[in-house]
Image (cartoon, rainbow, N blue to C red; front, side):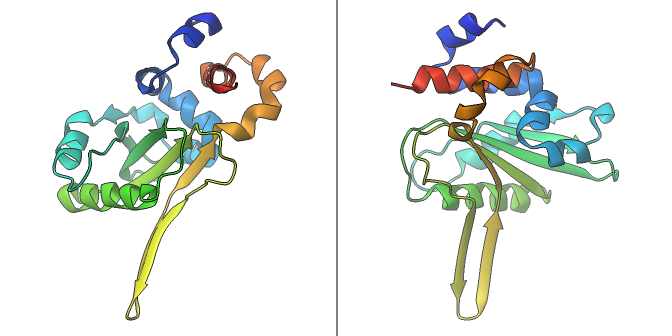
Length: 181
């Protein structure tokens, strides 16, 4: 997909979903290189949209959004699931970390699978960088940490990104240029 085509359609998360479906390996390699290096890509991967919808549908409270749940294999031979969440909103959200925690525990509770969570933020607030949900109560601690990337951090790397052929890098440039005033 050419840069111009991406720019014309990059105004909603369906493009991110399509990017994840077609270029998951490149996506993980670019944004989360350590996790990418631990995945056995030769064994393939499976998108678990139906399983994800079962968890999201039963969530209590306001409507919740998660993009992709993927079954992968680690090089260690362990099957695991990866929750990929693209946060498209351009504003701070008070309960964002709690929402990620809810998805993780609901997936674990329903399917008894460990879940690694990765979040991409496309907002313009350099100070909003939630990466965990935690609470302490009467000596009990609950902690859910997840990996994040903020596209805003790539702004100074556009020239370098433009010289590469990785579609995920092109998408990063287009997203940030399209959302800039």
